[in-house]
Amino acid sequence: MSIAAVKGNAIGAVMASTLFVTSAMQDGPVKLGVLTDMSSLYADNGGQGSVVAAQMAVDDFKGKVLGRTVQVAGDHQNKADVGSMIVRRWLENEGVEEILDAPNSAVALAVQGIMRDKKRLFLATGAATSRLTGDQCSMTGIHWTYDTYALSQGTTRAISRLGAKTWFFLSADYSLGSQLEADSRKVIDATGGKVVGAVKHPINTSEFSSFLLQAQSSKAQRISISAGFNQQSAA
Image 1 (cartoon, rainbow, N blue to C red):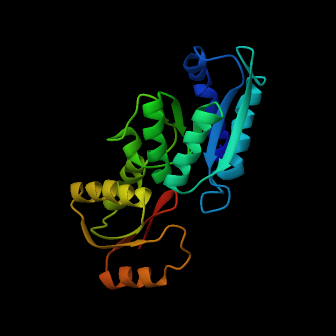
Image 2 (cartoon, rainbow, N blue to C red):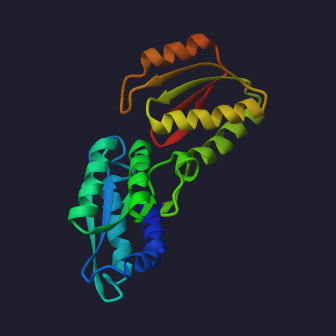
């Protein structure tokens, strides 16, 4: 199943919740704000695909919820402060009632805080940090897809069982990379492994040669690349 289809199913699954949240509000369109990345590193697994997926879910409801027209508001975002500004504008000035997607963990954490305070629904279908359901959990937040706990428990534990004992982390220097590394370190410790080095790289960088040289010089058996929206391990 494609990422767009998963996101479409997620949006449809919480549409019923939107009914209860919005039932006490004034009549008018139900506006869903798709906060996504249209042009940077998350555009492929978010971006226009997320907007289309949301529209598909709306179409499944025949464009209506309890007789009210459903509209989808889409925008670009990849910085926490700018994302927060957009969300506040949507909520306070444009009548948006629910935020979707947010394929950036730093943005998602900021949005979850706002939506918690506003008592509005936030459906995170693009962010991966386990903090969304950990220390930053919210009664109005729904984390639908993968998270860093699942990624570390699956990938890191499986590779550790194959005999990997020493690790080097190459992590994106923001919320996702930090949390994925932290969750993976716990698994490594629990399975008797050892982290012999780590380095962080700027988000969306395309030049990894200097970082990989550091990893090579560490002589670690495995290099964990905690970047983008997944985790990979290299010998």
